[in-house]
Image (cartoon, rainbow, N blue to C red; front, side):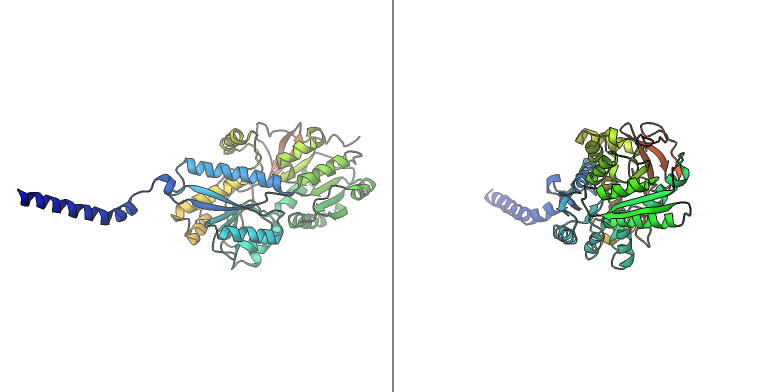
Length: 421
């Protein structure tokens, strides 16, 4: 009996020893609790302060919705997704470089943003292997990629070319809208920043090819300008039929419209992009914004995919969004990661993003494998052309076709209320 008992004790001791040795090995093979799974980190460089902060806040809200959606669905490849932000401040080159450098050391597997100070963002990102997905439709960013294409194998600009900001509005305003201009004079006022400079350059080219129209005013004002006395003196002398005021800073467009409306000329006024920022209409007011024309390649216009996003955004932030760019970009990257099977297999992720078009809220994303730039057009990412009427954005054209949709964006051209006063 004692021998049997001793034998049982010996077996127990051996079993305990085996368990003690094998436990760490077994635990490494077992699934970890959700809180212990290492997150996939998105590096998010964006402006938190300064003139671009309002736009940056919109970017933050959009990327937050995207990450929440991914995590609510079980994460990406079974792992939670986490945002690591970095402030690009006023987007001076040194601040952009610092932001990307910080993110590169923070364990991120991708850089994602709408824009981060072109072309500094392209130069800052291309020194790393980490993929950079941007919705920056700047021509400067496009050129920076083209000029450094061999080093930019990790840089994808999912948006189409920014040339559409000049060609489509010019065609619509000078040749399509049902309006008889008092003259064929054009005034161009622009903020001294690369994105604006490129649009103005493209605008000059299309205007130069049109013998009926003449650019009579072409002035660049410093970034952040809010006084336009000298420019308005010239505008009132020339009384141009068409004014292109090119900026993406709400305070600049608000200041110009307030001063212009003090003694308006019989001019159609057009601006790219800025009215899509909620802050613009809040600052200027619906009455003063009435009749303003604007357009971009990204604003909502009632497409079916917008509804679910809008609802989530409204529930979270309390108002209806006008853009979903950062959301689309995150989701495009996430789909590429799923196809690649590993967020750290950067080459496979980038290739998947190029090989497979993605149906997003803003349109169909198809990235050119040679230029690393998205595709423009009615069937891809179309340009949107709006007029503000009664505080809402009336859609007149979707790329080069008249908008025939219904709902809150439907409407028709109206002569701005300041004309003829």
